[in-house]
Amino acid sequence: MAATRRLIQRVSTRISSNGARRSYGVLPESNSKAPSSSSQRLMELESEFSAHNYHPVPVVFSRGNGSTIWDPEGKKYIDFLAAYSAVNQGHCHPKIIKALQEQVEKLTLSSRAFYNDKFPVFAERLTNMFGYEMVLPMNTGAEGVETALKIARKWGHEKKNIPKDEAIIVSCCGCFHGRTLAVISMSCDNDATRGFGPLLPGNLKVDFGDASSLEKLFKEKVDKIAGFLFEPIQGEAGVVIPPEGYLKAVRELCTKHNVLMIADEVQSGLARSGRMLACDWEEIRPDMVILGKALGGGVIPVSAVLADKDVMLHIKPGQHGSTFGGNPLASAVAMASLDVIEEEKLVERSASLGEELRTQLNEIKKQFPDYIKEVRGRGLFNAVEFNSESLSPVSAYDICLSLKERGVLAKPTHNTIVRLTPPLSISSDELREGSKALHDVLEVDLPNLRKINAGKTPVSHLTECDRCGRSLYA
Image (tube, rainbow, N blue to C red; front, side, top):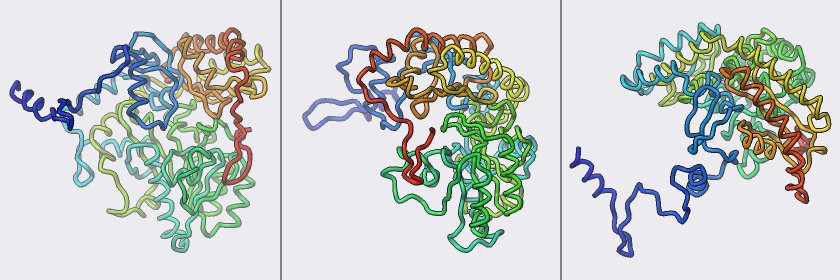
């Protein structure tokens, strides 16, 4: 072992052009005096060596348990984001970690070139649990969406006899299904689309919650529409809940016009909304369901597309797949993640605790009616929307920075909205702590924030969409 270490050390050392010795795999010396494990130093390293495709709240996660996070300095926080619903079961849930540890010592990857002894069991479990005949496993939520789009197009050409290369997918304004090229081709987010053209053809949009517009579009393009992709509750748009009866109306329209109803439940599913699926609020069954995030229990990426055989079997060998999709490690973790949801009654917890949280938030709204425009949500899938004019020049990001200082971690969306989506394992006491922190930010911190931001040009959240020309998120 000692000889191996010496060999590695020799191999990893090189002579640079100026004669100085340089060790590869060792971080370069820094002028920063901060310890290498400090939060400040770690954030500097990420800024220096990682692409700038995120704008994080400045806090470093070092350890997590349940709904609690600690930074490298030992400061404790309550997580009110839950990794965008990927840790519904709580950080580092012992049962999920145990499943990971046991499987990782046996077998982690087989690829789909061969069978393994975990995926078939997981496939049976997942399809039985949600009442579908087949599953196609992937890894990330965006991959799940891409999979569903390919299946829908294939079904449209082969089953519905849509002419070659003319299949259309309809989606909703304000949607978020990931950041792949196919998905941003549906997006109303200019940041996601500008500079990435040409976008993919074959996409049309309607307003979320507007069944009449959807019906009109279906009638106009009925022979070419393969699928309707939607979020039952729009997450990135700010936890937007459709009008009552909308999902049932969509189900009826899709059935009538022979269009696949495709529910993206990556964020809203797996107990987040107080139902196992957000579609369950109206007791409808989509033709395809996309799952992800919490399916991996916050431990490993796992996603899946569920459908019946008459849809799924249009995909043949060689037409779609993933080296890691359905791997034994992911399958073992996913089964443990589902166990936790059922055994700990997280659906019921989400529904009950969500009511508690919205009651608290609406009390705060009564105290600050000029600042808070709306509190909305289902289960523990919630958002607070602020009045942009009265809050200006303070943004939702500024609110989240102040919440962080008070030990609560949340993330804004569209400058005026703060999402509050904690792990479903959170306690009532922790919910109250989070609500109190928001109250104190508005009562104590906001006047100072307005002074600090005085003179700054507020960022308008009413951005005109490049595709439809309308102001969104009004």
